[in-house]
Image (cartoon, rainbow, N blue to C red):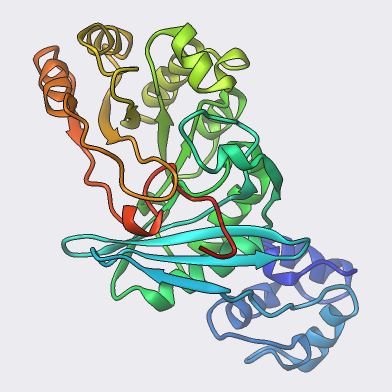
Length: 338
């Protein structure tokens, strides 16, 4: 089957046009027709010469964007959408409400191979990685649901850095000035710590923000909670993060899920503060959300924050949203029916 033109960057479209005997200068008009003008047929691309569309149609398809199979709305205004992509690959995306704007949370994979003990997605295993067109479909669905979409996070199902080629391409497509022109500086990519991709991002021209899941400061505890610790130890991950911050003169977002009685003791906050000392960061403390619904109160979360602040850490409590529809952090399981 011919590749989907929606999954090509503008530079790739230009190269494709050259290979088809057409002028690469038409790539901008083609890209705009597909991503901004809603073209549905390569033979009828708005503001594109007919011969160009016909040439492209010999080598590419333009499949309709997937639409959500189901939508759910939470009491706090969070909206969750379920997609069923080819091969029965289920994935969810979420629109998160804010005070003055909204955020789209996209999935990069159907399921996840990381197997983190606290994550509903990890319990599914990996079905497959999603294509740029499938991630763009999620974005477009969020755009339709949102009133004022200002930020975008790759924090849904999957480990984005284990599908980095497609995630990077999606970022470039969405941020292209001939398409949606969504600012890269308003995009955040979250990872459990895939070091080679952190290093690649450090050296790249992308301007997206980096978020890293710390989970636990103690290596043995982190390995039990997040098996990827055995592949990419946190101390090496944070060394790569330090290089990222220095090279790009940027801050990083660190994420810490608080599991009552597991990683929220005074010794944990002390170890965490010591581990991240000197890293220009914002640390988000996230209450644990069990699969299926809201979790119990985290009795030590505010005290844990105070301990970190006293140690010089910029620690914030994240207000979790959408827990009543299983749309909060760690709850996405892409169930076809409740």
